[in-house]
View 1 (spheres, helix red, strand yellow):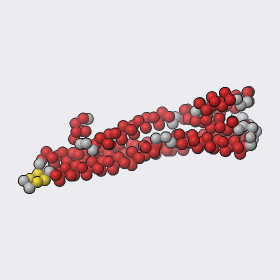
View 2: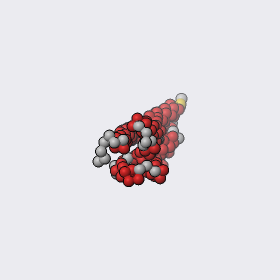
View 3: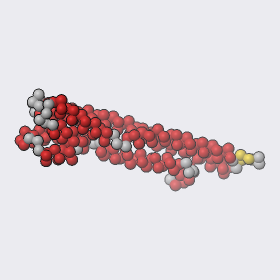
View 4: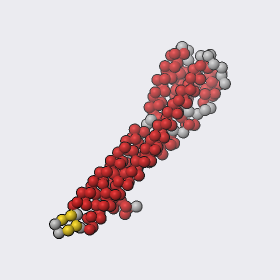
Amino acid sequence: MFSLIQAAGWPIWPIIFASIIAVGIIGERLWALRLKLVSPKELLPKVLSEYNRKGVSPEMIAKLQKHSPLGQIFAAGLKDVGASREVMKESIEEAGRAVAHGLDRNLTTLGTIASLSPLMGLFGTLVGMIEIFGSNSPTGSDPTQLAYGISVALYNAAFGILVAIPSMIFYRYFRAKVDDLVIEMELQALKLVEIVQGERKSE
């Protein structure tokens, strides 16, 4: 591996740095965007059961806020449980926007890496081309410098594309995942509002 880095020259280091960041973001988002962590299915029945037994208490609100992103949305709605349906929905929507922003964390960085990696590879290719042209002299070409320039050009282009492809795939996957989770949380929150306001029977 170290021999490949040597052959690619110094332009490979920004690409390697970007790949490390991309791997870290992908691992963190794979862990953080699991359904059972973001929008656990069992939370709504538990909240409704406790609400029917004890009503809304500060302890219940605090516990929900620490539970999960869905719990934060439920907590925002239950704070205004004595208000109208519209007020509850507005509180839930405000909390939902904040939660959705949190779910998007680091995705912009991942998308940027996916877009910039081929450009960094292209930059390395240009550096390699400069090395190739620099190998020519009135007395002939320097085979060592020529070979080095070719390796810099090719390795950087290949590494740039290699980083960009999985970064873009995971970026689009996570964007779709966040959209699905937000819709799921909206549906759960709507059920909570309708049941608490007496417009729908608890399931």
